[in-house]
Image (cartoon, rainbow, N blue to C red):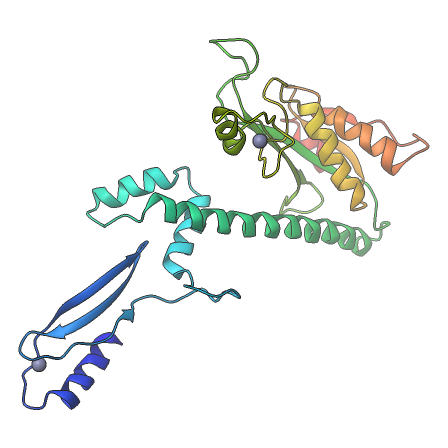
Length: 289
Ligand SMILES: [Zn+2]
Ligand SMILES: [Zn+2]
Protein backbone atom coordinates (compact mmCIF):
# COMPACT_ATOMS: atom_id res chain seq x y z
CA UNK A 1 0.00 0.00 0.00
CA UNK A 2 2.83 2.40 0.87
CA UNK A 3 4.55 1.89 -2.49
CA UNK A 4 1.33 2.22 -4.53
CA UNK A 5 0.37 5.40 -2.64
CA UNK A 6 3.81 6.95 -3.02
CA UNK A 7 4.03 6.18 -6.76
CA UNK A 8 0.63 7.78 -7.31
CA UNK A 9 1.34 10.84 -5.09
CA UNK A 10 4.78 11.32 -6.69
CA UNK A 11 3.24 11.20 -10.19
CA UNK A 12 0.73 13.88 -9.16
CA UNK A 13 3.16 16.18 -7.30
CA UNK A 14 6.41 15.83 -9.33
CA UNK A 15 5.46 15.66 -13.00
CA UNK A 16 8.31 14.65 -15.31
CA UNK A 17 10.53 13.22 -12.51
CA UNK A 18 11.66 9.61 -12.85
CA UNK A 19 11.13 8.37 -9.27
CA UNK A 20 13.90 6.79 -7.26
CA UNK A 21 12.53 6.10 -3.80
CA UNK A 22 14.50 5.64 -0.64
CA UNK A 23 13.50 5.29 3.03
CA UNK A 24 13.26 8.76 4.59
CA UNK A 25 12.30 7.87 8.17
CA UNK A 26 11.60 4.62 9.95
CA UNK A 27 10.32 3.81 13.42
CA UNK A 28 10.58 0.38 14.99
CA UNK A 29 7.73 -0.84 17.24
CA UNK A 30 8.81 -4.29 18.41
CA UNK A 31 8.90 -6.42 15.28
CA UNK A 32 6.68 -3.96 13.36
CA UNK A 33 7.82 -0.87 11.47
CA UNK A 34 6.53 2.51 10.40
CA UNK A 35 8.27 4.06 7.39
CA UNK A 36 8.17 7.09 5.11
CA UNK A 37 9.70 7.37 1.61
CA UNK A 38 11.35 10.20 -0.28
CA UNK A 39 12.49 10.60 -3.89
CA UNK A 40 16.23 11.24 -4.33
CA UNK A 41 15.60 12.97 -7.70
CA UNK A 42 13.13 15.60 -6.39
CA UNK A 43 11.70 17.04 -3.19
CA UNK A 44 8.93 14.45 -2.78
CA UNK A 45 8.50 13.09 0.74
CA UNK A 46 5.64 10.90 1.97
CA UNK A 47 4.02 10.71 5.38
CA UNK A 48 4.62 7.82 7.79
CA UNK A 49 2.97 4.50 6.90
CA UNK A 50 2.19 1.72 9.37
CA UNK A 51 3.53 -1.49 7.81
CA UNK A 52 1.45 -3.67 10.13
CA UNK A 53 -2.12 -4.33 11.24
CA UNK A 54 -3.27 -3.04 14.62
CA UNK A 55 -5.09 -4.90 17.35
CA UNK A 56 -8.29 -2.95 18.06
CA UNK A 57 -8.38 -1.74 21.67
CA UNK A 58 -10.88 0.35 23.62
CA UNK A 59 -8.40 2.80 25.15
CA UNK A 60 -6.69 5.81 23.65
CA UNK A 61 -3.11 5.92 22.40
CA UNK A 62 -1.03 3.73 20.15
CA UNK A 63 -2.61 0.37 19.43
CA UNK A 64 -0.43 -2.74 19.62
CA UNK A 65 0.77 -4.34 16.38
CA UNK A 66 -0.63 -7.79 15.60
CA UNK A 67 2.93 -9.11 14.98
CA UNK A 68 4.05 -8.25 18.50
CA UNK A 69 0.95 -9.71 20.14
CA UNK A 70 1.15 -12.84 17.97
CA UNK A 71 4.79 -13.30 18.99
CA UNK A 72 3.80 -13.40 22.68
CA UNK A 73 0.98 -15.88 21.96
CA UNK A 74 3.52 -18.12 20.21
CA UNK A 75 6.05 -17.76 23.04
CA UNK A 76 3.45 -18.91 25.57
CA UNK A 77 3.36 -22.26 23.82
CA UNK A 78 7.10 -22.69 23.61
CA UNK A 79 9.85 -23.38 26.11
CA UNK A 80 11.76 -20.14 25.46
CA UNK A 81 11.22 -16.70 26.96
CA UNK A 82 11.62 -13.13 25.72
CA UNK A 83 15.36 -13.18 26.45
CA UNK A 84 15.97 -16.23 24.28
CA UNK A 85 13.67 -14.84 21.57
CA UNK A 86 15.78 -11.66 21.42
CA UNK A 87 18.88 -13.84 21.13
CA UNK A 88 17.37 -15.86 18.25
CA UNK A 89 16.26 -12.71 16.38
CA UNK A 90 19.67 -11.11 16.81
CA UNK A 91 21.31 -14.30 15.54
CA UNK A 92 19.12 -14.10 12.43
CA UNK A 93 20.14 -10.42 11.94
CA UNK A 94 16.61 -9.21 12.70
CA UNK A 95 16.53 -6.13 14.99
CA UNK A 96 15.02 -7.51 18.22
CA UNK A 97 12.25 -5.69 20.10
CA UNK A 98 13.11 -4.08 23.44
CA UNK A 99 12.80 -6.39 26.46
CA UNK A 100 10.58 -3.84 28.19
CA UNK A 101 8.16 -3.68 25.25
CA UNK A 102 8.06 -7.47 24.94
CA UNK A 103 7.31 -7.84 28.66
CA UNK A 104 4.52 -5.26 28.43
CA UNK A 105 2.87 -7.22 25.61
CA UNK A 106 3.48 -10.53 27.44
CA UNK A 107 1.67 -9.20 30.54
CA UNK A 108 -1.37 -8.20 28.48
CA UNK A 109 -1.46 -11.48 26.54
CA UNK A 110 -1.05 -13.70 29.61
CA UNK A 111 -3.84 -11.99 31.56
CA UNK A 112 -6.23 -12.50 28.62
CA UNK A 113 -5.07 -16.11 28.20
CA UNK A 114 -5.63 -16.77 31.92
CA UNK A 115 -9.20 -15.45 31.74
CA UNK A 116 -9.89 -17.51 28.59
CA UNK A 117 -8.51 -20.63 30.30
CA UNK A 118 -10.87 -20.21 33.26
CA UNK A 119 -13.83 -19.63 30.91
CA UNK A 120 -12.82 -22.66 28.83
CA UNK A 121 -12.64 -24.91 31.92
CA UNK A 122 -16.14 -23.81 32.88
CA UNK A 123 -17.42 -24.69 29.38
CA UNK A 124 -15.69 -28.09 29.50
CA UNK A 125 -17.36 -28.91 32.83
CA UNK A 126 -20.72 -27.81 31.44
CA UNK A 127 -20.06 -30.14 28.49
CA UNK A 128 -19.40 -33.04 30.90
CA UNK A 129 -22.86 -32.54 32.40
CA UNK A 130 -24.43 -32.39 28.93
CA UNK A 131 -22.71 -35.62 27.84
CA UNK A 132 -23.88 -37.34 31.03
CA UNK A 133 -27.46 -36.36 30.15
CA UNK A 134 -27.05 -37.55 26.53
CA UNK A 135 -25.79 -40.91 27.81
CA UNK A 136 -28.92 -41.28 29.89
CA UNK A 137 -27.24 -40.65 33.23
CA UNK A 138 -27.96 -37.90 35.71
CA UNK A 139 -26.26 -34.67 34.64
CA UNK A 140 -24.01 -34.81 37.70
CA UNK A 141 -23.24 -38.53 37.48
CA UNK A 142 -19.69 -39.19 38.77
CA UNK A 143 -16.92 -39.41 36.18
CA UNK A 144 -13.42 -40.86 36.15
CA UNK A 145 -10.47 -38.52 36.03
CA UNK A 146 -6.70 -38.79 36.05
CA UNK A 147 -4.37 -36.24 37.55
CA UNK A 148 -0.71 -35.45 37.90
CA UNK A 149 1.54 -32.59 38.94
CA UNK A 150 4.32 -30.92 36.93
CA UNK A 151 7.18 -29.28 38.84
CA UNK A 152 9.70 -26.75 37.60
CA UNK A 153 12.57 -28.98 38.70
CA UNK A 154 13.71 -32.45 37.74
CA UNK A 155 13.52 -33.78 41.29
CA UNK A 156 11.52 -32.97 44.38
CA UNK A 157 14.52 -33.32 46.65
CA UNK A 158 16.92 -30.41 46.99
CA UNK A 159 20.54 -31.59 46.71
CA UNK A 160 22.02 -28.32 47.98
CA UNK A 161 19.86 -27.34 50.92
CA UNK A 162 16.83 -28.05 53.02
CA UNK A 163 13.34 -28.29 51.57
CA UNK A 164 12.11 -28.86 48.04
CA UNK A 165 14.08 -27.83 44.98
CA UNK A 166 11.04 -26.62 43.04
CA UNK A 167 9.37 -23.23 43.34
CA UNK A 168 6.38 -23.76 41.04
CA UNK A 169 4.07 -26.70 40.40
CA UNK A 170 0.90 -27.12 38.40
CA UNK A 171 -1.63 -29.90 38.88
CA UNK A 172 -3.98 -30.80 36.03
CA UNK A 173 -6.78 -33.32 35.76
CA UNK A 174 -8.28 -34.79 32.60
CA UNK A 175 -11.64 -36.45 32.15
CA UNK A 176 -12.13 -40.05 30.97
CA UNK A 177 -15.74 -39.60 29.91
CA UNK A 178 -14.87 -38.79 26.29
CA UNK A 179 -12.08 -39.79 23.92
CA UNK A 180 -10.87 -36.20 23.88
CA UNK A 181 -9.66 -36.39 27.51
CA UNK A 182 -10.07 -32.66 27.99
CA UNK A 183 -8.40 -30.89 30.87
CA UNK A 184 -11.21 -30.01 33.25
CA UNK A 185 -9.27 -28.67 36.19
CA UNK A 186 -5.92 -27.28 37.25
CA UNK A 187 -4.30 -25.65 40.23
CA UNK A 188 -1.03 -23.73 40.38
CA UNK A 189 1.21 -23.34 43.41
CA UNK A 190 3.85 -20.67 43.09
CA UNK A 191 6.46 -19.39 45.52
CA UNK A 192 7.97 -16.79 43.22
CA UNK A 193 7.11 -13.09 43.41
CA UNK A 194 9.33 -10.58 41.64
CA UNK A 195 7.51 -7.59 43.11
CA UNK A 196 7.76 -8.87 46.71
CA UNK A 197 11.44 -9.63 46.26
CA UNK A 198 12.11 -6.14 44.82
CA UNK A 199 10.21 -4.43 47.66
CA UNK A 200 12.07 -6.43 50.33
CA UNK A 201 15.40 -5.53 48.70
CA UNK A 202 14.41 -1.85 48.98
CA UNK A 203 13.68 -2.23 52.70
CA UNK A 204 9.89 -2.58 52.68
CA UNK A 205 8.39 -5.04 55.15
CA UNK A 206 6.22 -7.19 52.86
CA UNK A 207 5.63 -10.91 52.92
CA UNK A 208 4.43 -13.17 50.11
CA UNK A 209 1.67 -14.03 49.58
CA UNK A 210 -0.43 -11.18 50.91
CA UNK A 211 0.68 -7.86 49.44
CA UNK A 212 -0.98 -6.14 46.52
CA UNK A 213 0.00 -7.53 43.11
CA UNK A 214 1.62 -10.64 44.64
CA UNK A 215 2.06 -13.59 42.29
CA UNK A 216 3.01 -16.14 44.98
CA UNK A 217 0.30 -18.48 46.24
CA UNK A 218 2.22 -20.01 49.16
CA UNK A 219 5.07 -18.77 51.40
CA UNK A 220 8.56 -19.66 50.24
CA UNK A 221 9.21 -21.84 53.32
CA UNK A 222 6.05 -23.91 52.88
CA UNK A 223 6.38 -27.15 50.90
CA UNK A 224 4.39 -27.58 47.71
CA UNK A 225 1.67 -30.10 48.49
CA UNK A 226 -0.02 -32.41 45.99
CA UNK A 227 -2.65 -33.10 48.61
CA UNK A 228 -3.54 -29.41 48.81
CA UNK A 229 -3.52 -29.08 45.02
CA UNK A 230 -5.84 -32.09 44.72
CA UNK A 231 -8.12 -30.53 47.31
CA UNK A 232 -8.28 -27.21 45.43
CA UNK A 233 -8.96 -28.99 42.11
CA UNK A 234 -11.66 -31.09 43.75
CA UNK A 235 -13.18 -27.93 45.21
CA UNK A 236 -13.34 -26.19 41.82
CA UNK A 237 -14.89 -29.33 40.25
CA UNK A 238 -17.41 -29.61 43.08
CA UNK A 239 -18.38 -25.93 42.72
CA UNK A 240 -19.28 -26.61 39.06
CA UNK A 241 -21.24 -29.69 40.11
CA UNK A 242 -18.85 -32.24 38.58
CA UNK A 243 -18.56 -35.37 40.73
CA UNK A 244 -15.65 -37.77 40.66
CA UNK A 245 -15.77 -41.55 40.91
CA UNK A 246 -12.21 -42.74 40.37
CA UNK A 247 -8.94 -40.84 40.29
CA UNK A 248 -6.00 -42.34 38.40
CA UNK A 249 -2.72 -40.91 39.60
CA UNK A 250 0.86 -41.87 40.29
CA UNK A 251 2.00 -42.74 43.76
CA UNK A 252 4.07 -39.57 44.26
CA UNK A 253 1.85 -37.98 46.87
CA UNK A 254 -1.70 -37.60 48.13
CA UNK A 255 -3.42 -35.67 45.31
CA UNK A 256 -6.23 -38.22 44.98
CA UNK A 257 -6.91 -38.06 48.72
CA UNK A 258 -7.23 -34.27 48.46
CA UNK A 259 -9.91 -34.65 45.78
CA UNK A 260 -11.63 -37.36 47.83
CA UNK A 261 -11.91 -35.10 50.89
CA UNK A 262 -13.62 -32.41 48.84
CA UNK A 263 -15.97 -34.80 47.06
CA UNK A 264 -17.10 -36.27 50.39
CA UNK A 265 -17.43 -32.92 52.18
CA UNK A 266 -18.89 -30.73 49.45
CA UNK A 267 -20.75 -33.03 47.10
CA UNK A 268 -22.04 -35.73 49.39
CA UNK A 269 -22.32 -34.18 52.84
CA UNK A 270 -23.65 -37.47 54.19
CA UNK A 271 -20.29 -39.05 53.34
CA UNK A 272 -22.02 -41.97 51.66
CA UNK A 273 -20.15 -41.73 48.38
CA UNK A 274 -18.03 -44.68 47.42
CA UNK A 275 -14.46 -44.32 48.50
CA UNK A 276 -12.21 -43.28 45.68
CA UNK A 277 -10.34 -46.21 44.33
CA UNK A 278 -6.64 -45.65 44.20
CA UNK A 279 -5.43 -46.85 40.88
CA UNK A 280 -2.04 -46.59 39.34
CA UNK A 281 -1.45 -44.20 36.47
CA UNK A 282 -0.49 -47.06 34.16
CA UNK A 283 -3.75 -48.94 34.72
CA UNK A 284 -5.60 -47.24 31.88
CA UNK A 285 -7.55 -50.41 31.12
CA UNK A 286 -9.20 -50.09 34.49
CA UNK A 287 -10.80 -46.81 33.54
CA UNK A 288 -11.83 -48.01 30.09
CA UNK A 289 -13.99 -50.82 31.53
ZN1 LIG B 1 10.99 12.43 -7.83
ZN1 LIG C 1 4.56 -11.25 46.65
